[in-house]
Length: 334
Image 1: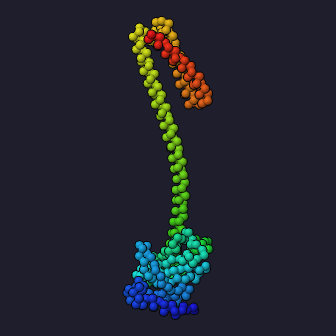
Image 2: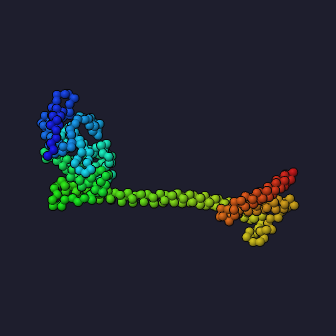
Image 3: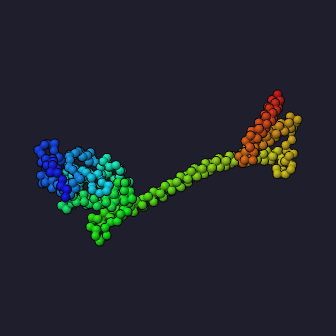
């Protein structure tokens, strides 16, 4: 049997019982003797570990000076480990990390008991720590057996998902059964989470497509609403013009505005009036034609180039009609 060096015992005792005011963060003498006993037992069972003293920073920022045992667990490949003895030990469990800086392999991304980023160990032995029944040696033995079946390093990626068989259920201890159950639950939960993540991504893609379609429909509805308002405005204008025309016809003696005799109501009093009526009719005809062309462009019947060419021609013609109307109006005023 390999026995660790007596220097380790001397180091532990000097660290625990020295009178230096800047010594370790263990104040209770009984606590110190328990720590001494548990550390010696740990180093006796695992000579690959060695004791040391270092500063530890808790998650809340508190800095304490603690004993730790660091080294490698005797499995293949070895797992570099650091076991920190908590300042409230044995009432508080030790703090265990995989020393990622000392390992040539990263931690498996989906390991149930090792955090791939920090290296923190979350085994059931630590979670169910009992101040009188648990020990550092028991923890190391548990981690050795646990990592033999679920190796935390990517070197053994196939083993990390539990390819090796556990002992028969009837031969498993209560802690081994808890570890096996934790592994099964972890991998089942990981599979469910992966499935939910895939479904979420698919639903997010569908949602994005529906949102894009909704935006397109909103634009189309806005355009149709604009066209509807334009047509309604045009319809209101035409109704107003029809009312004005019917009132004029009634005032000027047209008994039946809908009959063919309506044309007789529009007779010029003289040559200038007849010319003015013809010019105004031609101007309105050009205006109506340009409105129809605009609708034809919107419907895709007429190309935009043809539309521009025809509008230029009609605009010149309309300008001539309106110029004539200006001349006629000037002649009437004279």
